Image (cartoon, rainbow, N blue to C red; front, side, top):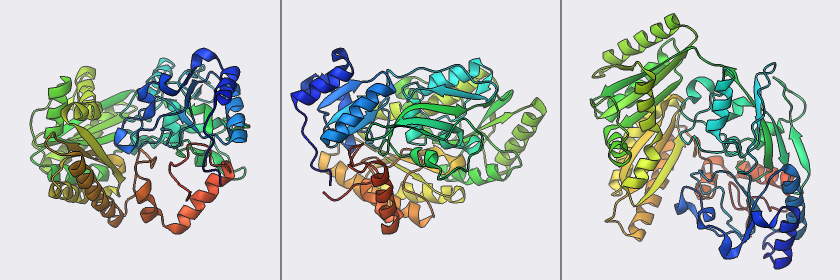
Length: 472
C-alpha cells in the first residue's frame, strides 16, 4: 500500500525546479493560502508541500514519473472553482496547476471540433466557438472554470436538458498517467467501439486516474433563435409542479431553472443584479432554442399557455438580449450572493428523477428547517439536479452548524435515494461526499471503483482520498 506517502525534501524540491523553472515553483509557506482549498473550505483545508505551475505535457510527465518513483502524492488543480473539496492536497505532496496550459487551437471546421489545453477557461472556449459561428453547449454556472475541470467532473449546467453533459461533447483526450506515460483516449471520430471506452471512464473521474493535457470537443451549429420565459408562481411547490408540465410539451427546452424569491432578493441585495420580474414567491425560468422563428414562436406559445393553465401568475418573455442577460445573470450569481449573505454555506447536490423534483423540494425544505437551517433550493430542473443550499447565520456556533448540516445531509441523501436519485448530479464526490458514497453505490460497486483506481494508479499517488479511499 502506498500510504504513508514520502514527506518531500529539499532534494525533491530541487528536482521539480530542474524539470520546470524556479520561478514557477513554490514550497512551504511560500504557497498562497488559496491553494489549500477549493470554493468549499468546509470540505477541507490542506497545505501542499510544493506548488508548481506547468507549461506542457512533458513537464507533467517528468513530475509524475518522479512522484511515482518516490511515492509522492500529486493533485492536479485547474481554476479551483470546485464545490466538493476535490482539488486539495489531503495528504500533502505536490499541487500541480495546469492554468498556464491554456491554449485554444483553431476550430477544425471539417470535423466541427475545437481542441484546447486543460487550463483554458470555459468562457473562452464558448467565445472561440461563437466567433467561428458554432456553439459549445455545456453551461455550468461557473463560467471561469477551466475546461479540464469541467471534463474531469463531467460538468452539466443549465442547458443539459436539451444538449446533455460535458461527456456528450468530448471526442478525445490526451493525458499523463500516474507513472508519467502519455496516453490518448479515442480520437477525433464520431463513434468508436474499439475496446473498452476508457475515455468515458476518465471523464468525471475527478483527477484520480490521470492528468488531462489536451481535450477535443464537439461543437454544434449555433441556434439562430432563442427565447427566455419567466413564469412566476405563488409558491415554490406550484413552481416545482410545473416542471413536468413543461417537459410534457412537444418542444424540448434548452434550460429549466427554478428560483425562490428569497434567493433572488439575496442576489439583488448583495450583487446589485436586478431580476426583471417582481411577481411571485418562486419563478420558473425556461429557455428555448430553435432553428427558425416559427419553431420558436410555437414553443413559446405552448409553454405560455401551459404555464397560465397550471397556476402561473404570468408568463413574461425576456424579449431582448439585455433582458434575458439580466435573468441569467441573477441565476449565475447565486453562489456569490449566498457567500455575501451568510457566514458559511453547505450544499446538497443531488439528482432525482425529473418526475420527483417537486416531491424532493417540498421534503427538503422541511428537513433543513427542522434542523434550524436556512435553506434555499434551486436547480437544473430539466435534468433533476437540485442544489439544496444551506446557509449559516451569525447566531450559529461552529458546533451547531456542523451538527445541523450533517444531520440534514444524512436525511437529504436518504430522501434522494428513496426517490430513485443519486448522491451528486454535478459537483462530484471529492472529499466532501466521500462518507455517503457507499450507501448509494453498495459494496460491490465500491470494490469495482477500487479496482479501476488501481488499474490506473497502482501506487495511489494521484489525488488520493477523493472519490474512493483505501483503508490505511
